[in-house]
Image (cartoon, rainbow, N blue to C red; front, side, top):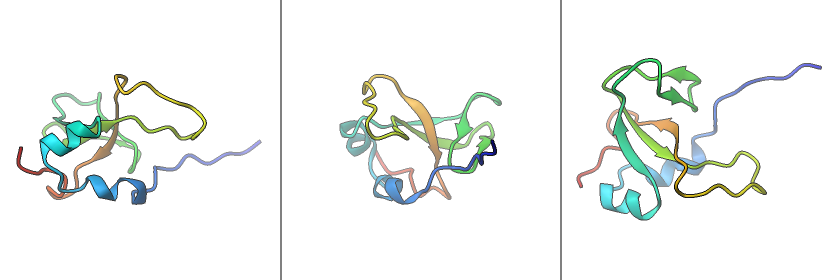
Length: 88
């Protein structure tokens, strides 16, 4: 059996780009800065994020039938060129 591992498609997350911290929190999303490597996997580019890079942490169910608790956060997407870093 063969399989392929690929990063997530960015399209479902574009609406998060540029949102303020308050708006992100309303959606259950947290903005963080990576403080260690490894420890912050970028699930779009399939790499470990560098120390100091900004990320958004949120739940993403690859299988839509699976429901995840809002309290369990997973690092899923890296901020690109400051697009996701809005004013709080």
